[in-house]
Length: 476
Image 1 (cartoon, rainbow, N blue to C red):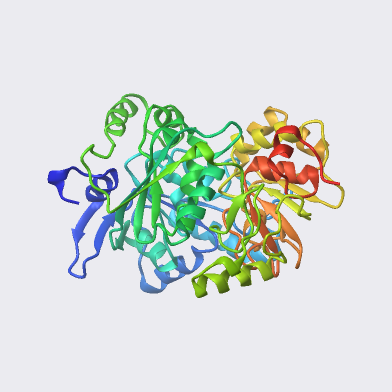
Image 2: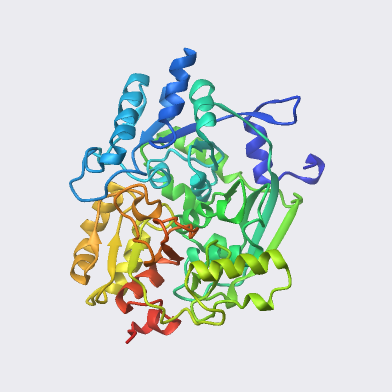
């Protein structure tokens, strides 16, 4: 944007990391931190060896095992035989390159987008890259999180840079006040439902407004996590005093006088009042209610008291056909109420909703109650640190007594490349970020929702209505 009109926060961070503007219109940018996961790193290391290159700055990269690890308590690299080779390659590659490695036996192991904030790897005003689309999660700390592919993982390892087209700045402004009991997951699902999975395409989205300022840091991480489901390249929130309090004493955050100096810089990371955005969206939060997806994209979402849409009421032929296909895949009917729809599996976890606040919320709803018959319910903490913190609060006891499985950290049922898979035709309600066809297993059917809605569904044996979350009623 024109600097005479002020700069957006995105412009400020991007420009500070631009090394060179290239002839093809793209920018060469510096990457402050790089986080590896096992499914997108093996080929990158293999290519480095073939070309005789080494890792340029191993101290700026960390590696974690999360996608294909078993989440069974006491697991090892051998627990999931189909993933053993990739996990062993990550361990050996990290060792040979001098990269810090958080394997299944490390006390800080966890989902990459959970451990990056909790270790202080993601800092305000920095750029963090990872070979996973949900790297935008760290935007909750005012960091630009960029998800990349395997070839780009190799490029960062070799050069600590990326070559990218600069996204356009976009702002979503949230006004009003969220109703009691609603969460950031409801907020972002409502947003995607309102502007669609292509609403942020080509943009870097800044989430702002009084509702955003009121969110906790963990809630902000959840919100930014699903920026990719909005079609955006990344999403972020300007840092504030909550951000600073969260980062103090984190392992990789600055210490002592360096932290004090960093705070001065972080507090100045704001979009200028006169900054112009290529696109702006305003959302009134006063009427938002608990959300749940009905279809096979995250924009297929309604209130839990709502109904499946009727494709016959849609004018656009392509959208009408897509809705019809989604309804068939999900085995639903136009006009059908979602509340009362029986579920087979309830999954609380993933990089979207597996932090301590998520587990605490779910535990508060299930305490003293029990999972419905014929429902398998899982709770998978996002990191082993989260697991220990939850156990110190007795949350594991609450979940186990309620009939939930209490697992070790990992991506688990979000990606169906480990042993946690939804059987064909089964219906799962989950705190994940995606509900595509076959996402949680071949012919699986996924409804995405907040930890509160998923916990209530596990108890009821069906998708709840709003009264079931507040009053804990059951389906019969």
